[in-house]
Amino acid sequence: MLMSIFAATSSAEPLAAETVVNAGPLPVTNSMIYGVITAVFVLGLFYSAARASQLWPKSRLAFYTESFIELMLGLIIDSFGDRKKAMRHFPLLISLFVFILACNLSGLIPGVGTITVDVEGTSTSLLRAFTTDLNSTLALAVLTITTVQVYAIRELGIGGHIRHYFHNIKNPMNVFIGLNEVFGEILRLVTLSLRLFGVIYGGEALLHAISNLAGNFGWAATLPIMFLEIFFSIVQAYLFMMLTSTYLVMA
Image (tube, rainbow, N blue to C red; front, side):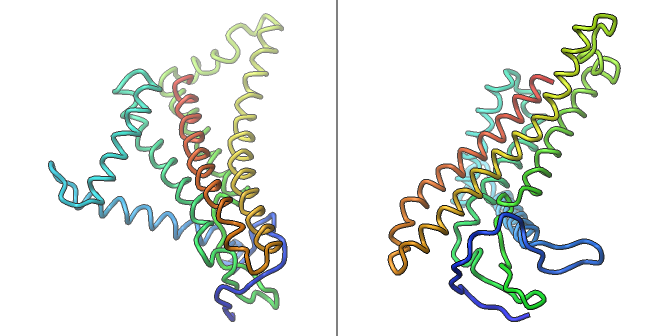
């Protein structure tokens, strides 16, 4: 495969992630590759911070990481209203926030979407931000809602969890309300995945379009949009984390 570094492209941002290689029957897309790279980077960053952590951190990385963790923990405790429960779910919530934020911002790095490889005679982007793939955001939503259901069953038991939806099946109205509740759980999957995908993909498509329209002045025209993208990247990661926190509290 021949690689073209930072090649200019005038085609529109593809809606679906593109297959780069096939691992047997499993197609490996550019978003999957970049998602793994982003996850390794995040793990490496936190591992380095943990290694440098002390009672009085001398490392700036450890200091800023611990300050960030304390800030996010305070928000989660306020959401749960109980420090013990917040601490139980905090590893999942902070992991979701940091990973989604890193994936959102990763699409703004130069070369992402423009480094191409030749796949069966077609020029294909090697890297694509993980959260600009609907399959990826849907996987995150499935992980989130499944975790919520598992913890709800642990707290209430299987019978108690079912009664949460259908507490009186002899009453047709209660059955109807229960079905609506079940539909609402499924709808959470749709809203979580589509909101994240739509905002991040839309932002990258906008950057691509403005860059092409501005020609040689594309760097200047896209600069304000990039700052807006950074803001929305933070907001979307925060929303995903806090909605997950709210679902856990409700469960």
